[in-house]
Image: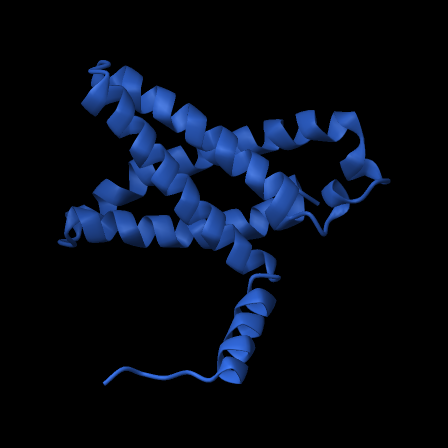
Amino acid sequence: MGVSVSSSELSQRSWSLARLSQHSAVRFLMVGGLTFTVDEAALFVFHGVARVWLPLATVLAFAIAFGVNFGLNRVWVFSGSAVGRSAGPGAEGGAVGRQVSRYVLLVLFNLLVTFVCVPAVTALGVHYLISKALVAGTLAIINYVVSRTWIFL
């Protein structure tokens, strides 16, 4: 016994998913998931396959993920902002440099908050993986707001 779905139900579900993916917050989460996957896969290739020293492999994987994340956020997630239009301050060549600079500041802020908060929350008796997830979830919300209002405006 299989579950049958009519073509109209399938069409309606496809339309709902397409409509949902039009929201920048959903695209932001999708890019975040893809970035995590790219980071993990690159780390595996560099360290697990090529046997690159783990700290160097981690930095290389992070750099690739950084590029993927910034690029997709710029051209897909926040494409409805000035960055995606043919005219305006976001479309000028100078905007990319400003956006990269601001994005780097956000990444450094994330590193600092993670470095301080994960051990602090863990010290309260929360398992370290749950602490990391709580901090990452909080930062994801902050990152979306900052990206939308300051980086890719």
